Image 1 (spheres, rainbow, N blue to C red):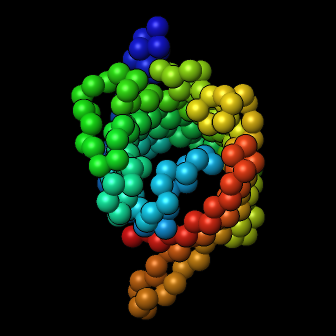
Image 2 (cartoon, rainbow, N blue to C red):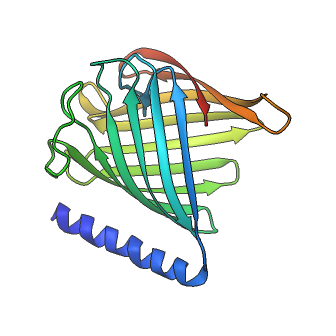
Length: 220
């Protein structure tokens, strides 16, 4: 049943993409990479080591399809990830996403990418709505234990605030709880007259796991 839902959702995204491509004669490619002192995702620590997170994306109209990864710069620390995603954003601020998360199960292991079982892959559907400076989003794992995650955000000037809550794999006891509270900011550091380096910084607290993280990164 969950595989069927995945196929149906993916097909809907592809139909939306086809409609968008019919309206837009050309799309655009985006290639980039972020460097962070550590990888924190939805309040979960994926390894206390610097990481590089590359992105390759093609977008046309409101549709985007791409690949995103995270790779530790230290040996045998785990946290390796390689994801594929599709999304569609409407002018109203509503957007939908489908993501295939791939996690090798052991530090330093390449795993078996073509084993599409729960051992290596996690499939997720998500939706978000921007409401001026506010945003609301929700995500659901299709092939796990009914994992849910919801997040609310608020942006003003150069500061972003966010609060996220989840259950199952997000928490220590699988019960629904707040797992991700944080504040982020960013600035441009001038390098030359024509080039500036974007720098971001975040303070993140996970009340469920009683942890606090400081994350700093640059975008290329």
